[in-house]
Image (tube, rainbow, N blue to C red; front, side, top):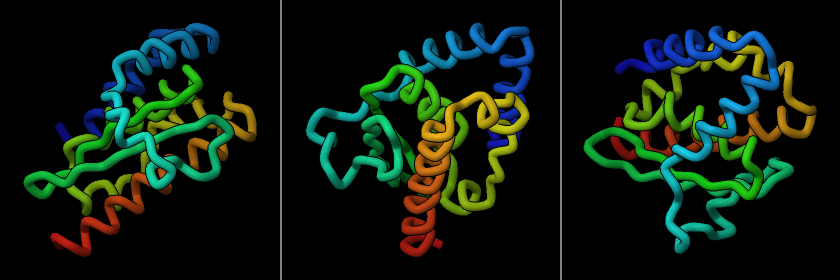
Length: 140
């Protein structure tokens, strides 16, 4: 499935909710499905800088595609990183770098986060794109 198709699926899922409290609950539920990072990978080098909560992200490069795992000590943050992973897992570095991730604005996520969580979201996207950039140099 392409990044755009996955984004559209998420936009459609969020359209089913009228209230933001329901959307938050859904984000928290999504966090429970997040591909969890191995305990051995919960290191300082996998900690995303700029997040209020502690968020670990690891990346594996297999067959020209990137596979992410994450965890967080905050349920809403874990839900947010799981949304990003859902969209970008199994994609090529080039596609990840080209992705504009318009679903974030379409579902209203950024505008309904506190400034610190919004900064954290930006840091998560930046870290994922840094992995994609690094692996695109290895395997253009």
